[in-house]
Length: 316
Image (tube, rainbow, N blue to C red; front, side):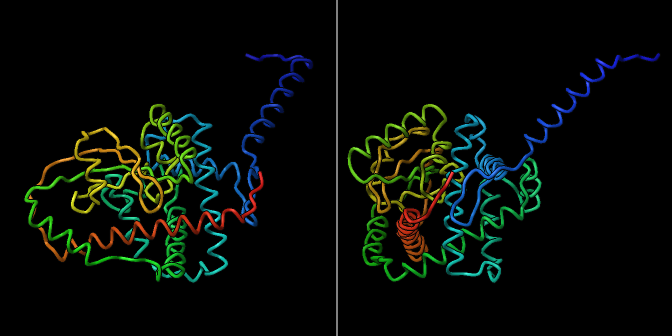
């Protein structure tokens, strides 16, 4: 059967085809959205970052696209600012710390409940993310941490005697302890009005998109990319103030804002259980020193980032 098309109809069909091709090309066109000094962020970067963040925190699937892109934008700006500062001090091509990168990758797939790196790679492909791009992100964070360590290591102040006293008190008073599985939101506020304003935004956000997605949006902690998840932690590793805030809460509840060295902390209890434990003083001392060092380290990291961000030109 032969269908005859008039010249007029043929012209119309060709016209629609051209429009369709143009629209398709336009939708695939890479556009520069933001310039951060000599670094750029494109619409494609925004999509890839959104996919990456969703791969680490699936709750972001429930967030509106506009809000998700906003979270991805802030994540990319933070990464680009760090990269610019890193390049002033280090040569990334000379980076050699593959063991640490592999350890961080292991931490990533473990938090996601995956068995090994191969399964992690296959998982990432579901989101159109390559393992090589994740490795590059990890390298930026590792080198940034090296930079912070060089600048602030002599300002890290650990009171080992005070920690030992805490361990001794716990050894005398605790036979069974609570093990928590926690998520966190860490944020900063310069005064009471700012604190009240941010808290209101966070409360609304938690009600709208949940605690973990709110952590992606507001938290300045390195845990934010995992929706604030920090995993299992024993109560004897926490400060007395935090323990007091947590002890009367049940699973799913959140704490009031707690003043900490790098700002304010809100915790959500994912799980909690009572466990029998024998306190290994040396091991616990090591854990508590590392915990305190990491807290101080994060504070200096945020202080330095805020300082360089103020002097960084960001154009839209």
